[in-house]
Image (cartoon, rainbow, N blue to C red):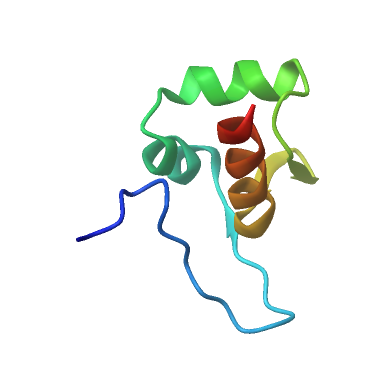
Length: 71
């Protein structure tokens, strides 16, 4: 039986981080870009700023989604 998309994890080599854009994260979480911006402004989701651009570490997002699912 295949895992749901939320249960699947992307394997990255140790020490390698994958930074997602707002648009990529919205696609991954199946939500609107505006929702991502709202969560960032409320500090409800882990993010980083690269200059004026928002980036999201894939591993941090995976941990965050797991923690949210367990609540």
